[in-house]
Amino acid sequence: MNTPAYIGRFAPTPSGYLHFGSLVAALASYLDARAVNGRWLLRMEDLDPPREVAGAQAAILKALESYGFEWDGELVRQSERHSEYAALVDRLLSQGLAYACICSRKQLEGSHGIYPGTCRNAGHGFTDAAIRLRVPELTYHFIDRVQGDYRQHLGREVGDFVIRRRDGLFAYQLAVVLDDAWQGVTDIVRGADLLDSTPRQLYLQELLGFSQPRYLHVPLITQPDGHKLGKSYRSPPLPADQATPLLIRALRALGQTLPDGANYGHPAELLRWASQHWDATRIPRRLTMAEAQLR
Ligand code: GLU
Image (cartoon, rainbow, N blue to C red; front, side, top):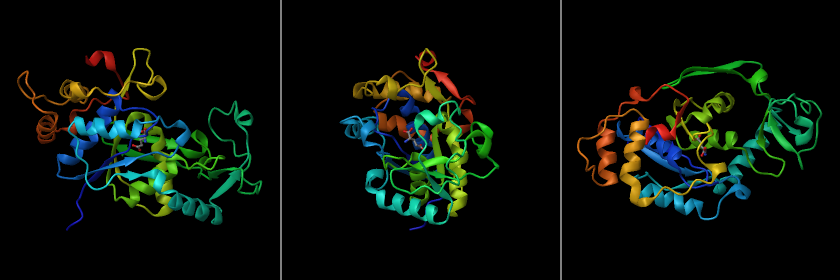
């Protein structure tokens, strides 16, 4: 079999149930893949057991199924890939590209989330320490298919970032880059809240010799108070009996044309129709969108 030209993925974190904002992201990545007969993979980003909500993994899979999504191949769980992440962290440490950091949260207060480099040359031992990746004093940029040109100076705007936490848990930035490359992902379609993580991921890809995927960041759906929908608000699970109307609302959020008529049929049929009519250039070029305006 030839390697398909397009491999997309949806990568939910089970720290909550799927909500309308995650449905918009899942739908965009699904339709973008299916519109070109690409593959669509599902990866559970269960890296952080303390933040995991009991039953969320099963509820996410069930919601995706009842909303008509079909993924290719086996579900991948990041919790089963710890040895790969550990090997990568070891390699980065032994190459001097990463180092141990023992700064406390309190010490980092006032640095506005930009690590000041305190432990860079301290030579701390690797146990009971966070591991940070050294970043270059360079601007990383890419052209997002919806958001356009995005650039960030890693040294000034991010600083050396954590790839393994002090409690031993691996960081999202490390796992996502390794797994996307390992799974052969060519196209990353996700919420705009991750736009500012992308330059860190580009740097890791460059460091590891991986090719750069294409990116498409869809508007983030927000609550009336401007906050991101979801996790911290403990959104209720997407109701199974509302699949078709919520998929229609999500298509509207993505600026897509809708099928005629009040009866849109079964969710899987609606997804098929939508993939045949998918036009990513119609996605609104904005970072956020209020959920209330879509009702
Ligand atoms: N697991 C991340 C989330 O649920 C998404 C990661 C990604 O798409 O790169 O927010």
